[in-house]
Image 1 (tube, rainbow, N blue to C red):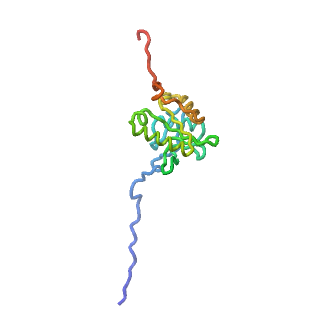
Image 2: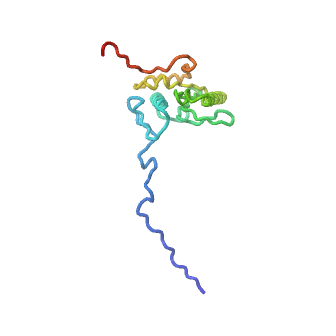
Image 3: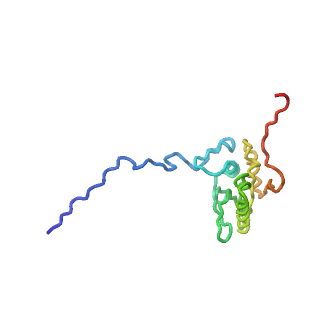
Length: 185
């Protein structure tokens, strides 16, 4: 008795992709920002960070150029203790020093309760123990400046390792623009 093996059926020919392409390349998304004349002109199609982080990103991009390992990075994971990994907003490598810059927003850090404050302090201690200089930048100092000048100043201070006084403990409030009307108008 002989067995006859016929031809294997060929799979049907594809007429197109089985599903519509949805990746970043197909949608025209990219990680490189489109820089304009100020921090509000930074356009990242891929969602990232808060407005103050975007503004400080623009300032570092303006001062240091594009992100590069060994110069500066955004949301870079760093060792912050024996068994802890921290994702810091910005890491700077300036003059042989490692600087961790954390943007401290009003709600996400100051208004989230004691647990978040404790986490921030534990992260700070771990980073300092691992050899990082930690600079907390209060976002209220620059987020209302559409020109970006205040963000540039905050970035330069962070690059020097200078930390602005925390408005929570200093007894000062964040600067808020107000509209004053004088006269009978």
